[in-house]
Length: 276
Image (cartoon, rainbow, N blue to C red; front, top):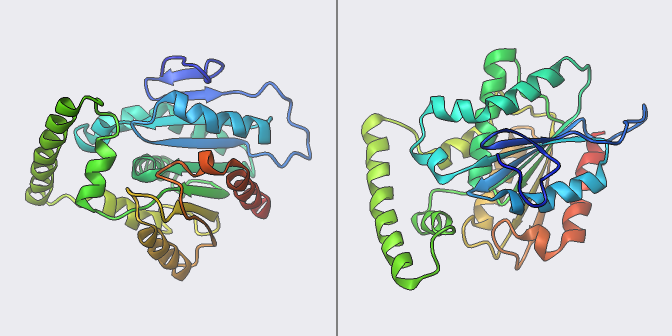
């Protein structure tokens, strides 16, 4: 990841990953997370995620912050090996933390794209270390959804040109591509990506049931329906996960923090305090 505005003090680890090492010395009594793992929504730019990173630097000045981005190609075209290469630097950071007894990690991911990368990290960590990813708290922002065709079109079209002709052509080609992609999945017997992420998030073999969760979602979200999130909350509770929900009424997809930052960060702080 190249240095960008807002993240110029982060160290790039590869094209999709960067790490912030704090300048503040951690006092022995600090309750700050050892690591904050930020996983962006699909095609989120570093400058988008820098707003969250800056808030975390202010809240927890002695924490390391690791950012991993996810592109549309990562979720559709790129192979398992390519995705593994993308997340490998992040896994190396997580492996190094494992040597610390009682290390504290806060996982914060956005939308289905961030959830997809979170699943890859959790499974990659378990394959090497033989246990679940050691997180104490999980923030699920605008996630998880369900497979809904029009919502998927809206999600993939976010980065398209504003020009009406180019956008119309792009959406047409996108519809064709998504149909072919789904047919290919069916022929190869591959599970639907969104439904797979949704299921693995509630699998205790993938995510530790002892880590408390905060779901942040909105009735106004046109890409991930609030009913789908609340259905997942219900399923998580039934499986023994400790869950809190913060439901907004009007904020858009991955825009809850911008809509009401005070409420958003108060909920995140409360989640972490309850796990410390």
